[in-house]
Length: 114
Image (tube, rainbow, N blue to C red; front, side, top):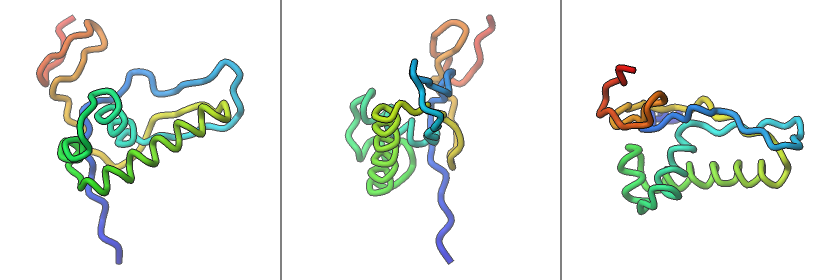
């Protein structure tokens, strides 16, 4: 019996969860939240893989597999004109330092009063 998959820790959920090119094929490529988080940490935050893996609460090897899958999916979508849908996965969400949709500021785990 395989070992159960441990949830990955993510700290960001995008407001926009679907991207459509101007001329779109009917194909939809699904990216999991943990795949997006891996790309955010490595490509946007410019962290080392070991640090990314620590933040996501996974091994470095697991992080490598997650980011490879994410990059492959994004590349395929860009090359074929497919839509990208961000949803699903096996994750725990920590909303610490979440960027507020209403005011654009970080609120240290609490919601904006606007």
